[in-house]
Length: 202
Image (cartoon, rainbow, N blue to C red; front, side, top):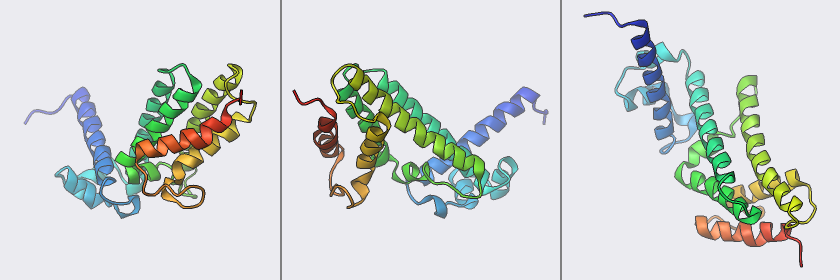
């Protein structure tokens, strides 16, 4: 059997690593992060556990890379969404929709992106950067509204945190009783309760 060239080996390694990370995403549609094992990943892509370990020497490394890929993907979607609409109120709703629909489609993956292992400084920093990127994205839109005379003068970071907190409270009773709401109902509530509160009352 002919040997693979260095380039072919690199492509194979990249393909295998990607398929393993994709398997983590698929498994997160079925179970929580803590319940996913290397054996689960191997079974998902029809290889042995030893094959997975050849590419990822630890479960933690595989999980971290998969989650970091996912963080980059959703951040890209948010930044793209922010560039598509001019009106700040509608732009905030558009960003909120990206968050809500992502949660509905990938609930366990969504929550895993915020998971931080205290002893893992690099993963903790990546999770923090992901959170900060989301907040900055929402805050910059709030600033647009303030500068355009649409929103009253408020702390844009605080407003962004409040908005994200409202969006994520759909799984809690603390601030809003949204457990039974669908995406459209939730977005209407965010618009009516939060975003309308940002506006200058004319």
